[in-house]
Length: 344
Image 1 (cartoon, rainbow, N blue to C red):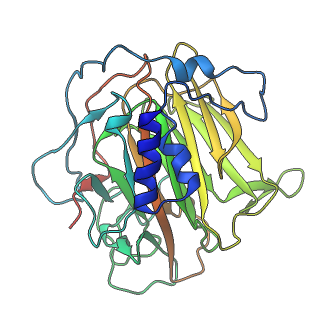
Image 2 (spheres, one colour):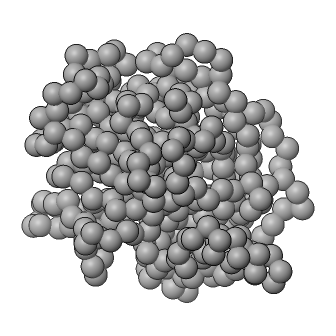
């Protein structure tokens, strides 16, 4: 109880909302996950209650080397954060510069086979007015930012380039959450990823907008839906996908929370949340317990029209609360693309 009271006091002093407090205290040993709407009978209590006697021993530090499109330099060492709540973080983006706990994607990247034509560019990531601002460049963009091809070659323009902020440290089981106003022009996607540097062991993502059925064989992007997905690998059929319809559209000008809880216990699962409400739980086609980075991404994932100049997507805060489940294990990163570079 003393620890819980301390967390409330810390959050009050930092000025965070009551919704954020729920994330900060999620690691308490007696916290009980709420069953999903799809499978209310599932008992997730054992997953949250299971704790190791101590953190697993890292096999090696996770590292991110520079990709072909990045500046040359030493590998970017990272710590393996799987040993409980003290290794997590809560980031408000209130400072004028990014802390060195973050890295910026600069180059090209393919997530489960989806490659943006303009790559990721460090100049599309900024802090402004107390928020992280991720900028996506559309087909009308004619400014000075330059993008990257799917092979990492610098392009003559910055059209269709996106932005991604990535944790330097790597995490396994835990609560992953971001809060912001995740709305952009048609074609833009805001996604939260947890994945390894090589993306071969699968990952977890939640993204806006989702898709809603518009006919027998068609679907349309909508902020009244959210995409929730897990993958055990990049093989065909190795994923679970839910395009969840919401009762209220999230393009209402208000800040909204995207979150998932990843359990690596004897009965592993991923539970997805929107605005502090459990929405869906997946217990198959999950990533293994190897540590991964958190990505906050704004991009144009598909080759569809982007009839705008630039779109800015603000994120107000982000947090990771490790759970330290028995299936967690530290692994080394094998980054090849895109490059991850320190903040300027």
